[in-house]
Length: 237
Image (cartoon, rainbow, N blue to C red):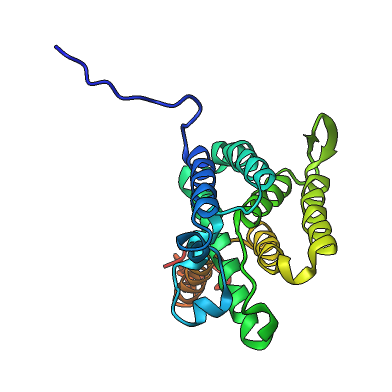
């Protein structure tokens, strides 16, 4: 019997690796067609307001510099892969893409009140990478991890990611890091407060607690004879 040959690229197992490939591919398309299709892949808040609704998704897979592509892909592959092992494929993928999309939408909403943001083209590879960097650090918390061989706590590792975003804004202008800053706030909220699934579990727990309390009001004590004190709790109905 013949076996069908299926080429498998080494290391491309899991959603984190494919996110890195998508970042490289989207960035190359942008670089080769930046005067046409490539420009439409970036997040331009004014363009989204005019109907370019795909941009909050596509900008997350575009970086505008070679170093941004290389380091962004490494972060998605390595830190995203580590989170994928601890969180699971579905949760990590939804977090990476969902946080980037929500950060883009927050930027568009801010552009409604700040017209200067409407014409800025935002690449989003740095946005997704920053969110995964900080999420990785916060998932460790006070436990030890390492930063290029240096032992640091997870919280310090997350602060280093915040520092990268701050330095980028300090050198290029803080208006250019609005999506990254929004992604960091969303990441902190997700790791500290929880996501929609956590809120749903809390709501269900609250409803169950109320149901149990309402049912307990109908319970009364049953005495086996008249000599048993009425406040005995041996029998309930």
